[in-house]
Image (cartoon, rainbow over the protein chains, first blue to last red):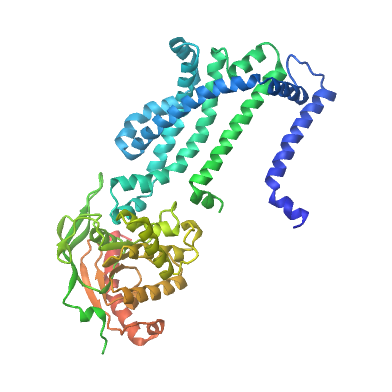
Length: 262
Length: 274
């Protein structure tokens, strides 16, 4: 295989890498040679890298990450457990959908982070308030996507399974669930982003530990390289989770991936 | 004509008896539509019967009643003398849009009916592989439906229907979505399978040629509400081959069906206000 064919095969990752590395280099060069850097207001990649290495060596961000993850995982799991059944019933029973839809749509559309101060007043500073915030933000994509998936289930396939003697249980397990699964995974991708916002806001407002607290404390004390390295950690986690879900989708729904590729 | 076809030898064994079937759909906020009105039809065991009629005449509705998915308002639908009350293993349908579960491989799709019957996985697998071979799908058992051509998809649909070894095969315009050549091929294969397996087949189609080529009898259904308008016996010898379709005799049969159907198409057009 020639060099050119090799390039076309990996064009996507190569160009992606070039753009990221290029931007980082440009950022570094601009603040090294063009604009004098005021470390109180901005920073540059080399300083962030130094702070990042320092954090890694000391392991301080690691404990913050563990604290935040605990709240995130609890709230997110709760969103899955509550959101999918509600969505399934909404998709299956029109009346339930019509009844719940106004509330859910209003809540989904509004910036629920506005409730953060109230939650902290009621639930106090700590794990519970953060869990509730993550839950509130990430439950809606699960509800709406599950409902959409159930609604989109092909009637023909339901009739097929019924015609071969399938019972109600078979319809759920053999048609509705597999047909809804890709919608749920897509919902989870949206929910991850919203859940991370929930964690951050919770920790910005009132917390004594966690990655959000770290970001806001570094910001308050003008430790910008440290702040950016905390943000970098968050970015890495978010990308890893989203990409992990994409991989999971391939494993769970190979038939869909093939379809999209066409 | 010395044709001795299977149905004639077995004329005395009725399989399906539809008597005075009437069904009216009553959609909310819209006028009720009478899909079938006093439709009566007897089919003998092992007979190949096609149903043709203008679109919307209730052909598919008739199949769904036979399948047990819909109940008629009045009238009786019997299978081997017993009233049909729901889906059953003696009947299986081949759907126009294939109706394959996209998340299942070819083999798993074919095994669906057996699985729902509660048959052991090892037995299922064995039967599934038998049908894969019969349907010419060897090598594709682990493919997903979206990886197959239309003709192959319908082979899977046919194999799935045959897997539970039903007495009656219901086919709802099964080849309508296929290109002409694949269609010819599938028709020939269907006749071979039918000849070997001795199933009773009810075949709904738009194509007069297809109906004439495959069937022992062709039932022409009237424009909505659907009634039996005419029954045409096809006295062509079996096994039939493609060349037969070029004979003057075959064209006469087609012309006969067409002249009956034409009246109904005109009625339908008048009804639709086209």
